[in-house]
Length: 455
Image (spheres, helix red, strand yellow):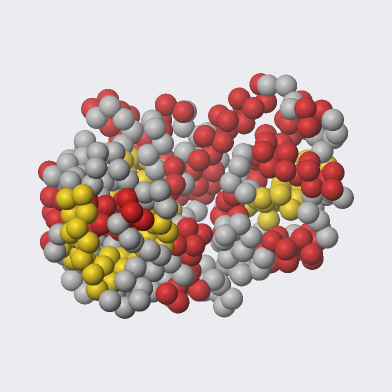
C-alpha cells in the first residue's frame, strides 16, 4: 500500500460511499468551464450511465463527440448539459478521489495486523481496489471481485493489474487469506489474460506454508499465463511479536534466503531460455540477507517489480557507479560537506560502500547511520518503515552539520513520519537541519549544502 499517496488522495475520515464524482478543479480556458461546470459540482451521469468515479467519466466521454451530463450543482439543483466535444478539446477538470474499496480478507501475514499504538490512522486501512491497482500499482487479491468488476477492467482497459496470488493451491491460498471458502484465482487471471489485460503477480512467502512444492506449483501455474502475466515477485513475510498471527508464522532466516535463491536459480534460467525473461523475481531482501551477490542488471529487464522491492538495490548500485565516474559537482568542490545519511539496517552496508567511495573520490565527510527500528520492532530492517522517533533515538550515531533522510523514510506530505512525528519535530530535537525528498542522493547533498550555508 502506498501510504503517503493514499493519505494525500483520500484521508481516512472522508471514506464514504456516494454516487457521482465531484469536480475539485476547473481550467478557466477549457471545455468544462465553457459549459458551466464549477468546483463543487457533482457529475452524476454521462449519456444516462451512472458515474462512479473519474475513471468512468474519462471512459464515457473519451471517444464521444456529443455527451449529455447530468449534474448536481453545488447549489443543490440537478441540471442536464448537452455538450459538443470539438476535436482536440479537453475538459480541464480535476476530480475528488473515489472511495477506495476495503479488503474483507484476514490475511495471516498482513502488516496492518501489527501496527503499534501511535501509528498513522491510515496504516490500519486495508485497501482492495482494482482501480488503485491500475492507477498506482497497488496489489489486490481479487478474492471477492465480482464478474461486473472484472468486466469493467476489460471494458475500460484498466491495465495493468497487480494481483496478490501467494499460492495457487486453493486450500493454501484460502488459509493465507483467512477466508472461509477458496476462490478460483487462476480462473480470474485467465479471463483477464484472454481479454488482453496485462498482469503482474506477487507471492508473500511464508516459510512452511507456501514454500517448497507449493511455491513451485504456484510459479509453474503462473508461468502458463505468461505473455499476459509478465512478472512474478516473491517477497519475504515480515512480522513482529505484535502481530495477531505471529504464532502461525515462521520468520525468514539468512540460511532460508540462501536456500531459496539456490532453489529458484534453475527455474529463472529456464524461464529466460523459454520465455525470454526471468519472469519470477526475488525481492532484494533475500540477497541482502543471504549475503549473496545481487543479480546483474540484465536479470531485471525493465524492472517490472521495482515498487515491490525487486531491483531497487541493483538500480541504486548502477546509478551510484555512474555518479562516481564523473568529477565532483561544483557545490561539493567549494566545501567539504560534513553530515550523516540515515537508512535502515538492511541497506546500510550497500549505502556505506558508496558513501565511502564518495568520501575518497570527492573529499566529502559523510557518515552512514544504520538506524534500528524501535517503533515497529527490530525485525523490521528496511528504511521505508523508519519513524521520526527511531531517527531521534539514533542521535549518537550522527556526525556533522546536517542529516539526510532519503525518500524511503516514509514521509507523508513531505514532513510527517509513520509515527505522526514531523520533520520539524526531528530537526528541533536533534538541533540539525534535515535534507529530505524523492531526489537522488546527489540532489539531497546539494540541498544539504544549502542548509549548511544557512547555518
